[in-house]
Figure 1 (cartoon, rainbow, N blue to C red):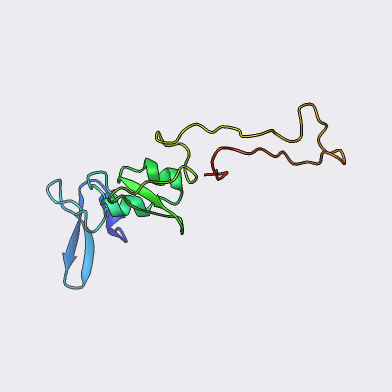
Figure 2: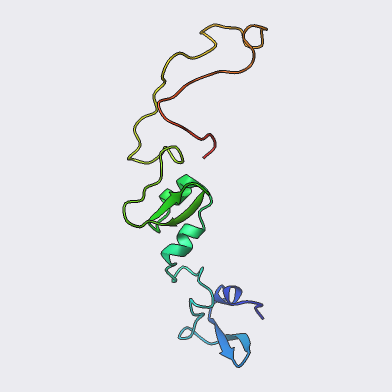
Length: 136
């Protein structure tokens, strides 16, 4: 007994039988298996580009997807790439098209400052040549 088509697909020799208003998992031999329409996550099933893009919840995962995806700002969604749309480097700097990150100006506090002192504080201020997002 398998409660859904994907569990049925994981059982060797089983197939998903569709009847009027019902579905069953039955031992069918190797000729009949579970169709991709009923369980698209099987290794034999090639996912659609839109499905691959929709599964990416972060900009760099979107760009790295095999679906030919692009991260759309604003809103932060992953969609199939069309025309000349590209993922901005500020969303994912790990793209080949993104130039290196360079420091502009000085880093504060200065070298050898003691962090936590009243005139220094606990923050480090660095200005880069482009916007970045930490954690993506």
